[in-house]
Image (tube, rainbow, N blue to C red):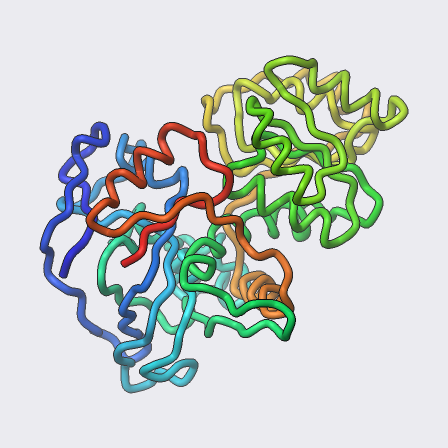
Length: 349
Ligand SMILES: [Zn+2]
């Protein structure tokens, strides 16, 4: 089958379109999916450059997000049938340990991500546990049907943002949330979730065009973080109170500003560190203002079902920035690396 593969860690010159062996069903609860679209995430760039502790067999198929048609199912599969149109939850758990039994799949000791630890979605075919696919929902009129591109673009970013805002951050209607770097997949999904539940969303970007697009998506306050002191502005627009919740995906470059932007008893949730992982925290502010600092990764199956249910009601549709053919898949990764996208970069398979 045709796939976008990584030949070794390094830079984008390690990417190529190749013919690789097609995967086959090997256990009774697996499904074989013929992919129709895949979507990129920042994770794909980390995988290209190499992560500590990550050892891959090359050539390695990239891509975490995808959607397609069920081609075949194992003997014990009950959730889907051949011909079903499905979207993929990219986080694969063992589904038999205590943590999985407790419903916390992204904390499973064997938790792995498609395209990072496992062969990914930038290919014609993929084999997955049946737990990792759900039928693409059909929203009621007047909402248009969910496209393959939207179904592929939805899962990783929306699931990550949902767990950060709702499960971990416990954002309540009327609360103030600060979201760094709108335009990225998680930040853009977070903005939509914040507005869906009635939060007050302050978003930042280095691009005025992205801030304008964020206003169209409902952002209440937009800040160009290259031009203003974000912590000071957050205090300014909240009557000195600060943000109840801060979503951190940036790390070193923003951490101290994030903490200074927090209200008394504010919560900071981190799911990434695109500018580096070593941050400085003044613990005096933390204990005096009774802040909570939390981590979050992906989400569990119940959270995934919930976000797909909301998609089926016409909510949280992903913003698709651009689409490329699989043959032009490397151009898609180049667009992601330049960071100019507003929403998701998609590959039609
Ligand atoms: Zn497990």
